[in-house]
Image (cartoon, rainbow, N blue to C red):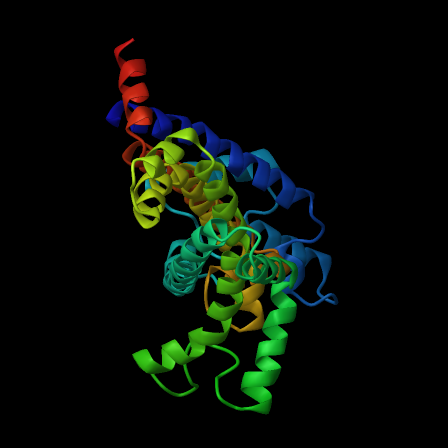
Length: 324
């Protein structure tokens, strides 16, 4: 198993390199540059070129990429923001905590809702309860995040004035735990609705496929209680596709946070990503893309590790392959 993890980590290196190359090419193809955002359109061309040289934008695209890669490999440095002139690493680390907080909370709550409801829906197939849960899951998937966000803000923040509509804390305060929790309610509801709606159907389908297997009929014929058949025998085998879904949720949430964080002014990675794109902040965009690629690869590796824990057959296949 350790050898498999090391091989995956070794493969991840060229993948991350390829991601940086593709991101840099796409970024350079986009119109505009940071200088256009920093200087006045009336500024003389000579002054504009001087600013380009100061930021290193007068070099060729290949030279700029090589310089960025050297700083990353030899110094662990993602460079400085071309707009704020702050270290990109510090900017990302400052925003990473709020994003992990809102993503982690939404993922855990969404799965706590989706897994038991999906199992219950599968065991009550074609009943009114099943139709109710399936309809709710379709609504959770179908309603766009931005629309649900605006509806919740209008109802709970503007009309009822129960919850704050933006930010992570009240202006002029340090932000207590209770204040942060209140500010999290609306964005977490939006993300949880999407996560739960998407995963209820997957868990239901996975359980229905397992519940029809012959070995479960044998277990029932032996007189085992239905709860034991479902929770011990069926659930363990249904976990494989469920683990896959959970592994995919992490990068999906990481990308979906861009819209949610912008609507709710949540000071996370998503808001930083959008502001960097709008200002053509090349250094910050490259750093954020690298972090996003790392999150996706790490989620895939963790998913494979959990596979081996859940299903001993997969772990034995890894061991057999390593011996050969």
